Image 1: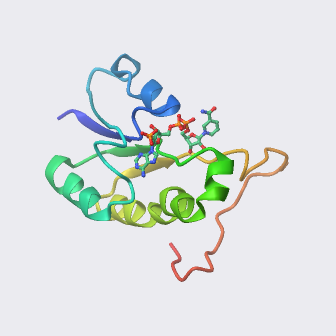
Image 2 (image 1 turned 120 degrees about the horizontal axis):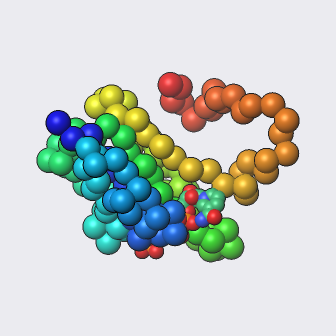
Length: 128
Ligand SMILES: NC(=O)c1ccc[n+]([C@@H]2O[C@H](COP(=O)([O-])OP(=O)(O)OC[C@H]3O[C@@H](n4cnc5c(N)ncnc54)[C@H](OP(=O)(O)O)[C@@H]3O)[C@@H](O)[C@H]2O)c1
C-alpha cells in the first residue's frame, strides 16, 4: 500500500514546494489541500478528512496566518490559526498514529539557543 502524506496550507510558499510530487518517493500518495479546500480551524472538517481520506502516515502542516503585524492586528485569528487549531489536529494525529510535522518561526525561536529545545509542560490544561 502507498504511504499517504497530507499537506495542509498547500498553496503557500512552503506548502507549494512540499506539494511537488516529484520530491517524494514514487510509493507516496500526496494529498495537498489549500486553505480554500480545508480551513485548519475547522475541526469537524479535519475529522471528516481523516475518516474519509485517511489513513495518513504523516501530516505536514504548512498553514499559517501571517505576517506578524497582521497577527498583532487580528490576534484572535492568529491564535486560532497558528495556535489553538493545532490541538484538534495533534489529537487526531495521535489517535490515528499519524506523524505530525509542524513548523515554527524565528519569531518564536530566535536560533540563538546553544542547546536543544525541550518540550514544555503546558499551562493550558493539556499535557501530552
Ligand atoms: N517561508 C519561510 O522562509 C519560512 C521561514 C521560517 C518558518 N516558516 C514557517 O513555515 C510555515 C509556512 O510558512 P510559509 O512561508 O509557507 O507561509 P505562507 O506562504 O504565508 O503560506 C501559508 C499558507 O497557509 C494558508 N492558510 C492561512 N490560514 C489558513 C487556515 N486557517 N487553514 C488552512 N490554511 C491556511 C495560506 O492560505 P491563504 O493565503 O489562502 O490564506 C497560505 O497558503 C509557517 O509555520 C512559517 O512560520 C517559513
